[in-house]
Length: 178
Image 1 (cartoon, one colour):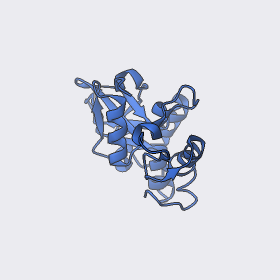
Image 2: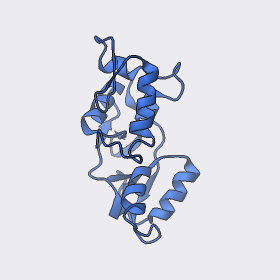
Image 3: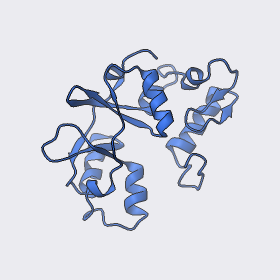
């Protein structure tokens, strides 16, 4: 947990704000990423982010044309970021306080990468970090870092995070955190 976020960060994709949503989604598919960072022309540091959820809710659900709408029009901004010397624990606390799943990792005047909840927790339990244990280590119950719901074990917590915070929960109308 005291590991630097720069060591845990994944490579980020940065696109110009004038790129269309359709182009961005193609790049997201090619690069196998769930978000792109958005920069202004000629600037190194991004100013915003567009996620798969943004595309779904701000473009598809709003019946906007993805071939006409630009990233600038749908991005979330200002960008929430963390410095490269911050710890993973710091990143988790910031994501939790802001209700987000991704943080830009900044090194000097450029972006060093992105750290996500999925990066921190991991897909394989043996390689992941016990996020609930970190957030509430004195309690016998596991606590969701996003909504504070309590669970008896890590398997229940994992299913909850997958379904409600990362998966189909919002699409099925579960608005607990939103």
